[in-house]
Image (cartoon, rainbow, N blue to C red):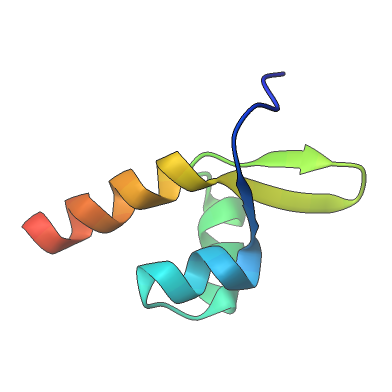
Length: 60
């Protein structure tokens, strides 16, 4: 697992995406949304993955 780069928690990632943290949890349970990793008991998202998702959401 590549742990280089900055990681965001679910609330931080959701804030950047302009959605509720609960939506992120639903997406994870449905197997969709941004790629995440589990570090110990915490789910985190790479900052560059979230930045790409923000850009894609804006392009729609």
